[in-house]
Image 1 (cartoon, rainbow, N blue to C red):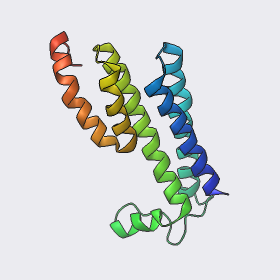
Image 2 (cartoon, one colour):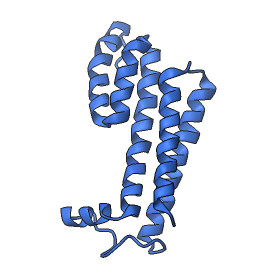
Image 3 (cartoon, rainbow, N blue to C red):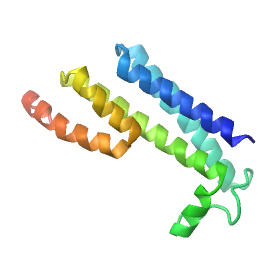
Image 4 (cartoon, one colour):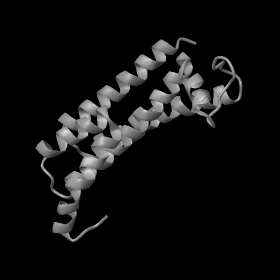
Length: 148
């Protein structure tokens, strides 16, 4: 299996989804496509790969998958399959969070000019963007009297 090709494909899928999320209008059909085709496909790649490794159908390098020690996790990420699975995990979760931020921002009437750099930060460094959004959304939520 060519993990470089799979890595490139998940990167391309995420880049296309993030570009659409940040730059395009957000009708319900686009948001559904981003969620189910974007995040959904990343989840499928992740799940199939992870289950394949854990079941022993896909070799993961020396020692198998050990998530209980830093050495074990380092060993997982020392292989192309480990890096691809881990990266796909990050891409799926960050895109899901980005979709939530965009929907929440639109619902709270937060300008797209404010949303765009936050979404970019979420794309590049997931928890950083999420943390910024939580700080920005609080006054908007308070203004609407909505905490959810």
